[in-house]
Length: 386
Picture (cartoon, helix red, strand yellow):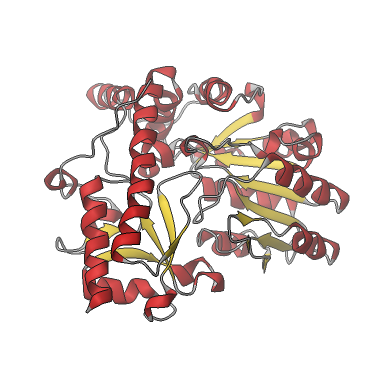
């Protein structure tokens, strides 16, 4: 049965928003840089937040707002992942969870592996946790992006103590295979290292791709891993501050339970209320409609690039609404987003911010109306022909 796509909000409505996407640039610029989407909230989320406002429910977040049970049911429905509610704990956002988990599992000065090109805050949160960043870039096989498992093994053998994984990967949209994750876990266990897996894009896996939660990849993964996730990316709730730290082993669960209570107190009440509503089965139809829209947009983008920017290199992402595009053939330097903003009035994310491997690249957010995708690529194409 085909699923009707989700319609984006009108542009005049979006421009009334006060978030980063709509307040950073003037109105003539198409904003496609930050990972916010342009769709109405899922109706159960709107209802939950409206009721909270109406009754003045703006106090402290309770110890059990329903997130644990809600996520357990969501994970079972959407990923086939069976987990125990006691192994789920909340905090303010995914990177906050990452920092606290790293603080609890590494010593000051320990090296933590990242796999660039990767979400820029990874390089910021590791020093915040007392660690030192070590890069082991992804491998581009020509058909897919893959973890450099041999490189990761060499880095761990040389003394690195942890891997900060992005699964699905931002910005490439790669959903790492179960086999790759299981081997990563075996390598980490052999070197007494930990894996912290950012899985915020997990609900956004596209048709034909299977998402494997890291903790389910193998018994080794359950033993060495921590997952951090949130409803915020799929349901556009970043400003409400709620994320989940998940474990699958008594030892790792004890580490999370041993975190300072303040880590959990940082959970926003509206974030918790919205998260419970997002994880409820009543929001599944909205999420399926969103996925239908994003699937259409990622395919549309491929066609538009072929027409207007034929020298661009773009691989459709396995998950999410972010496109990683190589524009180095157009001679716009290491950071094409700068030239595109000046010459085409389209704001894209800067490729070099994702690491040296991002030179010549841009990240484009297609979580919007398809007409906006068309206009943006046409503008950039005109710049290329000028």
